[in-house]
Each structure stands twice: as structure tokens, then as C-alpha cells.
Image (tube, rainbow, N blue to C red; front, side):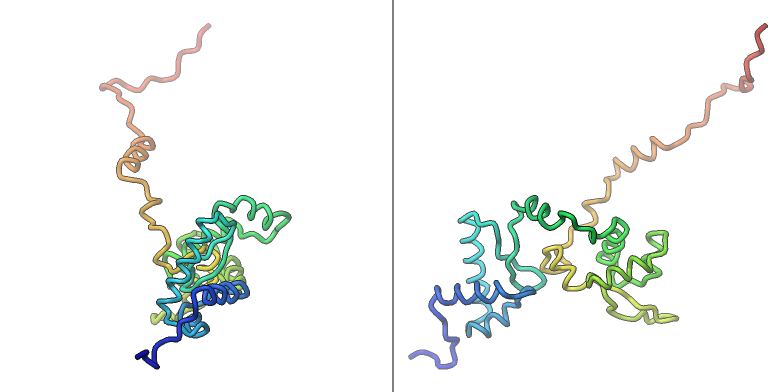
Length: 213
């Protein structure tokens, strides 16, 4: 006898079509819990259906993909088509982030929660304008207050930051160890910049050559 409390599972085709329709109009990644409520199925079933759809798109060589980012699912262009998408998006665009903004955002991402003064200390320059720009664009925001003297505002990255980078969580950020040179490289750099004292063998340093007639 069927369990009356069990999730009513739609036929696979109907569930797939419903998922595609909802995700197509969603402005942000949609949480599996919400998708489960809409489809009246368990979130685990949503995960399975999304995986099936994603695999199908990949097998068909579509120009888009169904991916999980920021804790939810969304459609986005396929990585292989990135050069064409960048050409389309960046053509004539003047609102790209500067190198200083990208550097500041990376510091916040890896050191959060972090104060504006701490970011400035790491970069060695004033970051008020850059931090304001990143906050206006929605990539960073105030997340807490420092319990110490002054109770400085602490900043962290936002869900929009995860969406922009295509990450599901901050755990997906690449390890900083990947960008730190190994000990042999550091040793070679130290050796190359080391100033060796000139050997004199006890002789007085040679003066300038005598003038020749």
C-alpha cells in the first residue's frame, strides 16, 4: 500500500521540463530545497534530476551547462564557449574591475572577515574607494564587527561573488599554496639577489688608474 505521506513523484519528463522552466527564468541559483517544494519531490530527487540534465547537455555538446553554484542550480554558458561569450560581453564595456579592485577582492575572499584597515595594511595603499566600489557592485559586504577597541566593520564576500566566479562555496577557492613558490625557488631567488663581498686577499683596494700622458 503506498505511503500517503510520501512525495508525489512526477513522471521524469514532467519533472525535467519543470526544472528547465524554473531554472530558465531564475535570476539567481535556486536551492534544491526550493526546487523540491515546487516539484513536490525530495531535494535528493532534485539533485538526481539536475545531474541527469547536466550529463545530457554535456553529452549533446550544448553551448550551455546546468551547474551548482552558491548552494543552488543555474544555467550558464559552457566553459568551452568562454572566448565567444567574453567577446560579446566585453565588447565596448568600460565597467570592468581594475587590477586594484581584483587584488582587494582576493584579499577579502581569503582573509575574511577582515577590516578595511587590515586590507590597506596588506596592500600598502588606501583602499577606501576600491572597497566602496566592490560593495556597491555587491561582491563584498559588512558581515560583522571586530570585538576589539573601535569595533571596526569587518567585510566578507557575498553570494554574488560566488555566482560571478562560478563557485558553490568558499571551500572551492583554489588553495593559496598553489601560488606560493617552493623552497627551491625561494632559495634560488635569495641567491640571485644576494650581494657577495668582493675578495681582496689582504691587498688594498685598487684605486683609479693613473692618468696617462
